[in-house]
Image (tube, rainbow, N blue to C red):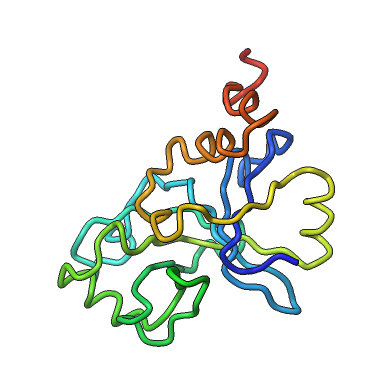
Length: 182
């Protein structure tokens, strides 16, 4: 059973899917209606203050997935500071009162290592995710980085996780972005 806090690592077979090619998704919610997560390693070309001028500091903005890309989401390690946060695991949370987030960011109480912002999310029905895992589109692993996942640079995250898996994944970690360029 998939639970919050797990990571989905895209298998190389996901080549050609622009949303999920070489992606790492953190699962944040598991409900009867399905699963919700955010892609951790797909930064966008603009920052949070480009879309929300009330945020005075510059924070990267990430493509969280193909669903509701006009909505902002966030994960963080400040559940004790942000009311109405939803627990992902012992060290990570998602959502919460956005006005409080803006104040904490603008006051310098949340840094890049504490919060990550996303446009959109990734979602699956229970059956859809089971089929994709069975079809070897995803490897499911524990989040060994805990809350450090927020400070990990997106470049190289997929490769680092593939190497950590060992075996055949080490070979796949060295394949070019486009295998036809090999």
